[in-house]
Image 1 (tube, rainbow, N blue to C red):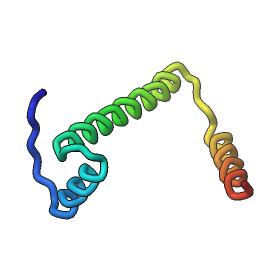
Image 2: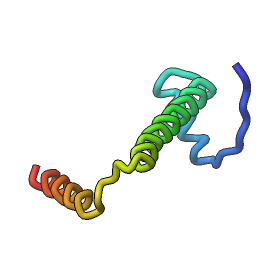
Image 3: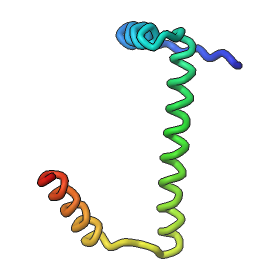
Length: 81
């Protein structure tokens, strides 16, 4: 394991203490887990965006009016349950 140090505001510091205590882990364990989850989420987002870039590079594009029609329909379904 490699140590990492950073400055955080008091409110976040207090929240880390509360959450770590509630989970029964140390502040360091909480911080390491949070960083791992943030890195994983960022890597997943980057991969997801790359799929779109690769598709666009191959000419696999969806016209804007089709995208917005699908979004409007999705919003309508969510509102109507």
